[in-house]
Image 1 (cartoon, rainbow, N blue to C red):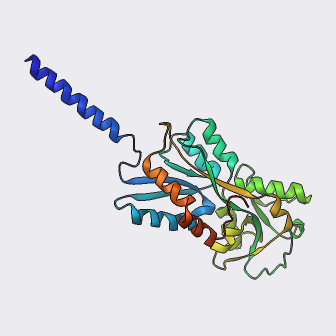
Image 2 (image 1 turned 135 degrees about the horizontal axis):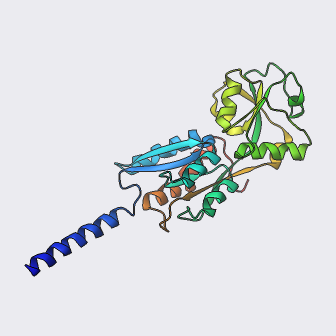
Image 3 (image 1 turned 120 degrees about the horizontal axis):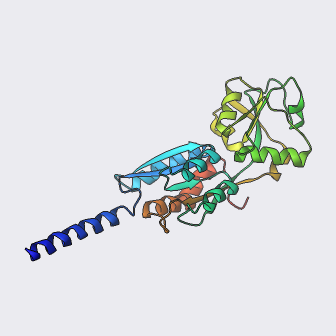
Length: 255
């Protein structure tokens, strides 16, 4: 009887140990949850496809939104394994909560441009043009990376804008311009490229003073990131990922 009991207890211990080992990989269900800034949609969809091709049975689930919204979700306990932010400040918020499983690494850069209605019918030529009260301008909210960058370009240029609305992500700003709800908006140069002619971009000098750098990191509280998380980050940082990002208009991390 005692021998049978010992064998039963041993079996339970083995099962619990195996279960515990399996749970160390947050993508054990075949899904890798990647939280990425909205401006990364096009390149990350391509990178995710490449990742799935070399990881049969694994699906990359992209959650694309404003970086500050994503950070809030992660801090609230959302099941993210990888976080790619549009600025370092937002990544630092997640790090401060002890929710990074690895140190963040910068993988891309981006600058703002003025998105205008296709064909630029109002003849917008500069940041100063947006001070015209007859031109409706949309910006990202200040707590969003593209909004923080917009604040910086206003400070360095001395041009103060009065937006008709402040949006939660750069894609929302782009959407308002492309659908005619606004005449202009400050977005990333990559967003204009991805719009396929729905809007035009008007560059301005002060944009070079507000370069956004994009960091990426594994998330979680278990110490080292899961192997699949590391593989995805390595793909983004490697030649293939960097080529994809470059093809979509992103600058190198040191630019």
